[in-house]
Image 1 (cartoon, helix red, strand yellow):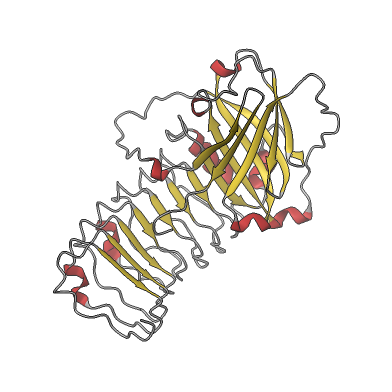
Image 2: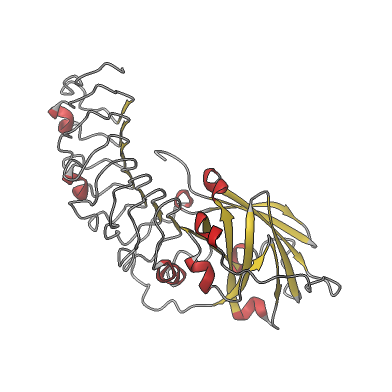
Length: 357
């Protein structure tokens, strides 16, 4: 359909549930009857660079997944009716040319995924709806701050801002995610350009892909999980999986060769990954043993240049009652056990990728 200039009239398709317009390079107009497709649950318009005006979609109350991507849409050209789609769960506006959204997302209480990948002119993130779990904004070159967009989000488990401008307040975002509800029993992943968060991480990161963690007495009851931080080369940009091997550190484990990481000029071309793994997600493994005194951790199969880890204390659950949530595992960072034995545990953490994304 590369030569399609205009879509046909949709009036004869009142029960249509899924519509995809892909690589219609000459498409200039979508017929206004699109708004009559109130049964639509999935709508994707992708790689239609000549499309300038989008019909109203405010009446699509059944729409769950919406993608308007790589259409070069500028400010004011994204349909404002998106803010009225109360059942929307996934929204993909990636690879467009707007600098801001002219409508609010706060009413989208069921929205779980927001994809703004490659929106190079985006100056600020919109205020995020309270139940959002996953924010993807890699390659947003003009973005330098997360602001207060996440202030009311208690369910963020994955945020990715790689490959864009240096984010100067990533530490505040990290703290907010750690204080949220999503980390109770599942993994959390934050990916940022540069090393601003890594510089503030304590204890200091070590050079290389290995680090050692000394465990205090009664660690498994007094703390809630592991927080790990690593710096990767940008060559990892196309990869969404990191493997971590955890072994009990024996008394003869040599820690004298460990070198504390110090920032260098080349680090500005790298990215920081921070992830949290709760004890609750590890207790069922053969490896789990509360008598462990120290751990030796290695990042495998990735270009990791620096690595660090610390324990995170259990947090209060006050103030989180009464919030509804779709607990579907489709909207979490992925965590898979690759090897499990009494002496060693290998896990892989995978970024979100499904459906429209």
